[in-house]
Amino acid sequence: MASVLFLLSGGTGLAYEVIWFKRFSHVWGNSTLATAAVVASFLFALGIGARQFGRLADRVRSPLLWYGLCEIGIGFLALSIPFEIHSLLALSARISSPLQGQPVLHSLARFVFTFLIIGPPCVLMGGPWPLLIRQFT
Image (cartoon, rainbow, N blue to C red):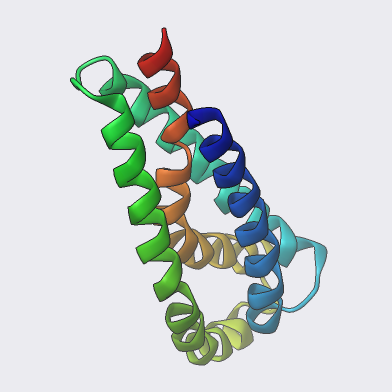
């Protein structure tokens, strides 16, 4: 049963990533660098989550309970993302103009703001794999 839940969780994570690509394209545009900001934020946060929850998995009594808490947290945080992206639209207009002549800073700003929004649920998405490994080994 846990493997089926993990499969569904992974599919949902990929669906979130596609949805976030579309949503952030309204904020940053459809450039390669804008897409890279979303991919980099997603993967960076997954790595942070896997590392942190990997450490935690060795110390908790019930990794499966923590797995469930991660999934609940992902759901709640994902619900807030449309509102956060909407508020980012106004900020995007303010930071894009001054940074147009500085592509490195512009890309870095995109990454930072994207990470601040999708980072928390993606950190939680990185947690289930080490927790399940600990549960069943």
